[in-house]
Length: 413
Image (cartoon, rainbow, N blue to C red; front, side):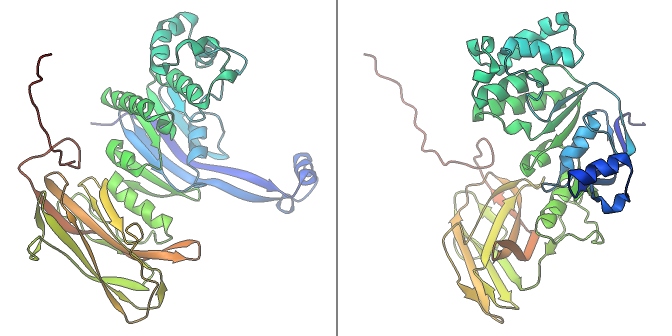
């Protein structure tokens, strides 16, 4: 069955001219000088292509300056591409710059009608949507006051409520789910899940990798205007993490993340490497199965090929989707090594109680540090060890608070 395309992005390029001054800008506009000497070309996007199908939730991740916001503005028609094309099939609601179309002198109600009109709705349609917008924003009688008097929290609540309640076919979200207080954020995520359940097409841009992993069907990684990779969320998050530390290479073999046994993914600059890792239970026995509530220890042995100042040793647990559940490192735990010398081996242990819910988890390990202000990865090992947590009592979420629970009948007065 052929999937219907909601958005087709075809070889999109976006060029910005970085002029040597206002005079150069004028000369370029008049065509009176050799253009190459007037400005330095900067490509915010370099031949990016992506097909997004109806009903999909597609994530776009990348470092700041990678071109994510530029691409979204081209999709929504705020910017035109220098080359290439974008085809959109469906009405878009974009949560990009919340409140960008608000008139600060108007009150909240007036701005709802102003924005609704700009989105192409009639007064009757906005009348029908107004109650749901006001209920979602939940700013009370402030809605009758000029928005210039609003706190930043009230402003984004109203702006988000307007953008999310117009029932679009395509929703574009750029970090907007992190607005407001924790209760409003929860409401935003619930609405987001409602859109997804209803089969809406969603483009989701966020630095929150757990949310990317949870909600997205497919993810694209952008870096310096280029599309690096596209695929399953877990695989693309790994690519992004390598980009962050300058360790990604396009020619690396594609790893099959669909298998039940996740393949080891490792990288680093080679100044140190993890030569051994294992778990022991409360009796000191090596194992990969830990009883919930019992004490266990994580063991690492790290060898140093070169001198390294202030190395940091880490571990983390992730679930089958790659969502980070918990972890720590020697910096957080305030256990420091001032300098590891070339040829040295270090043994590191982390001992704690197992309070994760029953199930299978995957462990990752690392040796990292800083060279001045620059974060350095000496060796990272993702999906190094599968661990089974054995439990006869699970609670809500990933982690058990081990509550001491009591219920007693209240005495009558």
